[in-house]
Image 1 (cartoon, rainbow, N blue to C red):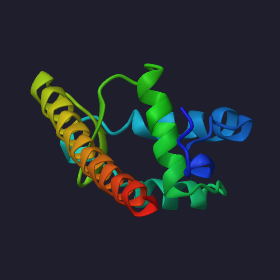
Image 2 (cartoon, rainbow, N blue to C red):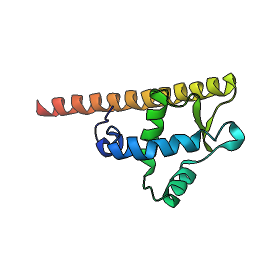
Image 3 (cartoon, rainbow, N blue to C red):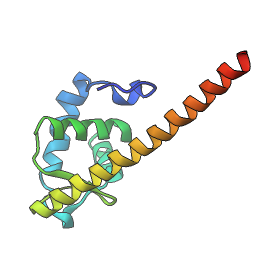
Image 4 (spheres, one colour):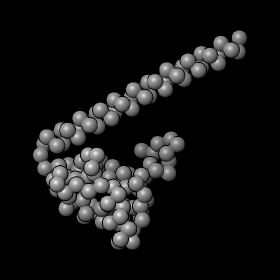
Length: 129
């Protein structure tokens, strides 16, 4: 899914990302089973750099998204500390709850922006008369 005004960050994976980066990232993440083995995006990017791969944080998130939605690795979750493979159902439940909370926060902002647009539009129409 490409997002308007974020096309550069959200375009589909390139051949390089899918064929070169994805297998290396998956291989590395497979070793991150359990909360004690968490790895941050900064650490992932740094590790890839030592292997001569280049990636920015937005594209790493896109690859992580691809891994999740295509079931490449099961139970790959994230916390404020980074990514790891959940080892308990509760960790997965907590991550899903976190996603739900983020969805709700985005909806709240979206609704506020719609309200503001509606006010601006009304004011624009009123000033024309």
